[in-house]
Image (cartoon, rainbow over all chains, first blue to last red; front, side, top):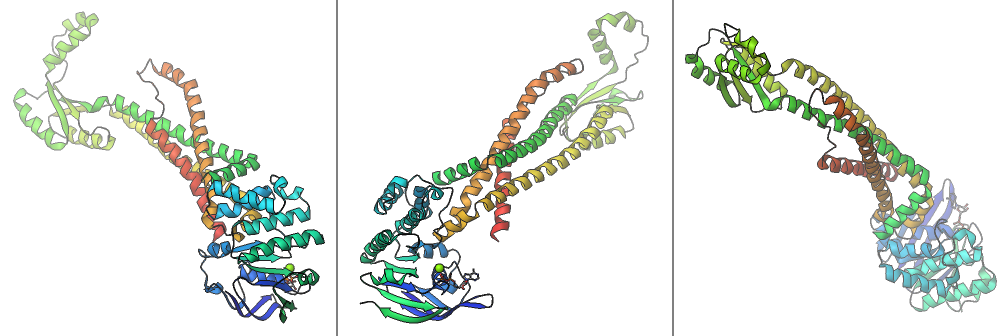
Length: 222
Length: 291
Ligand SMILES: Nc1ncnc2c1ncn2[C@@H]1O[C@H](COP(=O)(O)OP(=O)(O)O)[C@@H](O)[C@H]1O
Ligand SMILES: [Mg+2]
């Protein structure tokens, strides 16, 4: 369902991704690992078209990303739930409003939005902070709001860029368990993280290791 | 919709000063424009009322006699659209004069000859167009037997000259203020947009359509335009209430005339225009930003 063929990405003269080819099936749990600067974020950004200039082909559910029209782009992005490395929470809006935005943009009804948002706030343990502005929250709390926002729209693919980066190991564990629940419901999950140790403790999935823009290993975890 | 409104209001609240300046600029522009409209509407009515509904007097030469009347009437009728035509012989004119000016009867009685000319009173159909009236009058005057025609040409001409001068000034002022308000609105939207760049980027990333992103900006622009228009008209109304009775009083000795406020139709038109202006400013600046 996600197919990359010979994808390369250049920033100025520097290649951030080199000839990446990759097949990801519906319902897979993928870890993209590698040191900082390896190209993990760049790979995810190409998938949700935050980087739209690249070489090679990317197909998502049969849609060719190089040929997607600007009117189809929002439709594509709504399939994704994205946890951004820098969270990307709107500073002038409360945790609740940040999460609700996804559903408002999708044209959902107010009653449904309220129910849904409260539900993900509860399941991420952030219900007490619903009306807090992002900057009054700790890094870990912001991360949980970001995760809550990523799942609120019932996406078919979750892309998480260092979703446990600001968390202690217990909270990191909790987030991974949380995402695992979605995996069990059939959601495809891609997590980019430099923390290999964390991934090794996860029950199922595949680790794709990249370094310096190249795939060096495509492993299945035991 | 409620959601967009909420966002637009939140943005207006967070950029109070900028929005206030925009609304004030728009309302000042609307004030200037509506002052001119008020002037034109009333001046137009002055012309109409002084024009006495297109009445004109045709004074005939002394050689005239009643036998020529039928032929003259046909001739005048062929020159233009005439509503009514009434012959007033000099005898009748003198009688009327005697009746109406009671205190001067002694003077009039002493007259041996009737000094008044024979006349035709006509009513011109399309009298609102001064040019038509003027041309018609000139053509009538060119008839041999016609001595003169009186339709208030001298003062009307002068008045119209001033009126037209005002009109040109008015149009250019209106244009200037319209552009200024448009520019300010567009600029406000641009600033609002840049102050929310991050927000817009995030909205895009979570799958918001361009319409969804732009809608609050449009609402903001439209509200600025609308409230600017209402405020400008409000200021005009207050000014009107303060000065109109004074002007009417000072004019009372010359002409019975009261200044009227803009008609409902024009008020609606102004509010619609200023709302449109808010929308258009927004449209221009978003078009520039999103291209
Ligand atoms: N916008 C950018 N402009 C220039 N270089 C970039 C940009 N984004 C990423 N890079 C470079 O691309 C490489 C990969 O970056 P990134 O994908 O963020 O790595 P990772 O997420 O694995 O830490 C790095 O060398 C980084 O400096
Ligand atoms: Mg990264």
